[in-house]
Each structure stands twice: as structure tokens, then as C-alpha cells.
Image 1 (cartoon, rainbow, N blue to C red):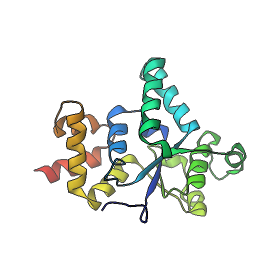
Image 2 (cartoon, one colour):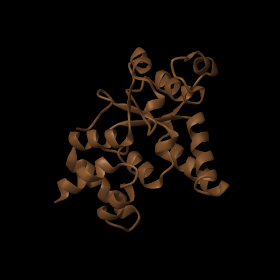
Image 3 (cartoon, helix red, strand yellow):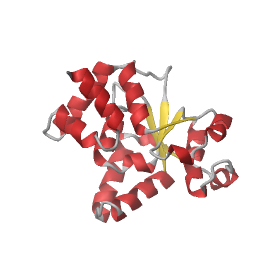
Length: 189
């Protein structure tokens, strides 16, 4: 299923799904034409991603700046401005450090938040705002079921982009999204 302007599905990508290079690449390739969804993030999400890239993955300031620049250039419409007052007003998210993610979803009218930390986003709180929350694994499996051939084509494109094949991409995703990898492997047999 391809989403058009009339039928647009959008997702706020939390920093934790943007840090692993292979996962970030897969998620963003799904948002390229023909797009399966529209990606969204905020300056706060980008700052968290940058901090994790520097601290956890030991990326240089130049590497981090390049990643941010490329993401924002490829998806200029992805940046969501989030008012500080809204972040402060969202009290149903227990961890104040995660409230900005829901605020980005509210401001952009996003359908879903993609995060590896779903326990940080209580369902009853998200229901108030009409927002779903999925792990990257669940999101990718759902997208696969909507259009398996397009998903496989995008994985092939991802592999070609780094002079590798689909199997290499799948193996690099195994730790982040094991259910999706299993689904792709079963489909590819």
C-alpha cells in the first residue's frame, strides 16, 4: 500500500530508533518515494540522537552533524516545532524526559510514535491524544504485511546503497528488529 497526500500515515521517530545506523536507514528508506509513511522528529529528538551517537557510538561531532544534515535535507518536512509549554503540560507521561516525543506527535497530528521504549508511553495517555505507540519491530512487521514486495525492494535498495545484498542488511537489523528479520527470512525462502 502506498500512501499519498490524501492517505497519509505519519510517525514520530524517537531518538532510540534513529541511533542504530541500519535501523535508521531502513526506517528512512521506507519514507522515500514510493513512501509507506511520513517520518517526523523534533529538535529535541535530534539532540537526543546526537548525544547518543557521540556518547554511546563514539561518533565525532562532524559525523553527527553530517547525519543530522542529511536527514533534515532528505526530509525537510519532518521537523516538528514543539512548544515548551506543551511539553510541560503533558503530565500523563511518567518520565518528563519523554514528554517532548508525545508533544511532537500531538503538534504534527502523527498516527504513531516509533520507539524501543514503549513502556515509557502509557496507552491510556496516548489514547487521550489518538496516538499509537509501536516498537520498530512491530512497525516494520506491519509495513511488511501491507506491502511485502515493496519492503523487499527497499531492503534491496538499502543493500545496494552500501554495495551489499539484502542478506547483509537483514543480518545488521537482527539485534534491533528480530521479529521483522524472521518475517523477511521466512518470506524469502
